[in-house]
Length: 228
Image (cartoon, rainbow, N blue to C red; front, top):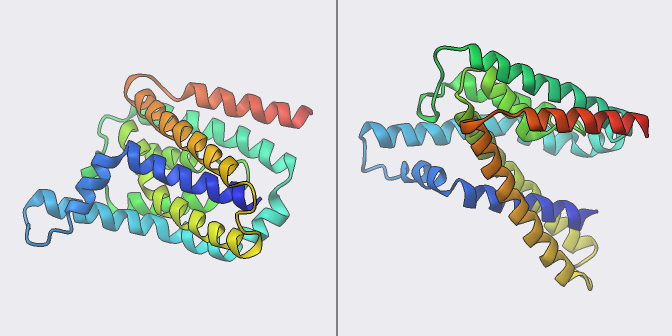
């Protein structure tokens, strides 16, 4: 329902802010226009890259969100999306491991950002993990794994907060908070904690291991959905 959607989006947005607070603070510091040294200019560029990556999915979400929900939220679509994009994530990491030169957050280009942004549009299809597909796009684009994870969540932050706020006000106008306020607060706290853990885990896997656990999980879940 609307309450659940608003809860998940807002909790995920706050989890990103908490987990990546240093990166977000550094990017926002770029708005100190009195500073024109290289570091501050790079911070301002990072903000522009995030905005560019957000625009395609933001527009597509506003225009097609309800249509996609109605037409594509069926078990077969979800299952095959889980399997297909799980394989793509494995392939992206395999490809990225072969690269000799990779980009950090400060070295990202405008085409990098646009590519990730366009993949966020595809993530509107049910069963397609937004973080998974944008991390894959980053890896194919030559980002190092940790940068791909960070950029994925940074470009997802405005979408999460925007969608959460829209759905929250839609819920208030239709249903009000009703008698479920306490349950919603508990659910929000649970989603927030699990979101922070998931982000930290992805960052750890990017630095110390690989994403195979998520690849296997997605493929197995997709197979189970097809068999049930």
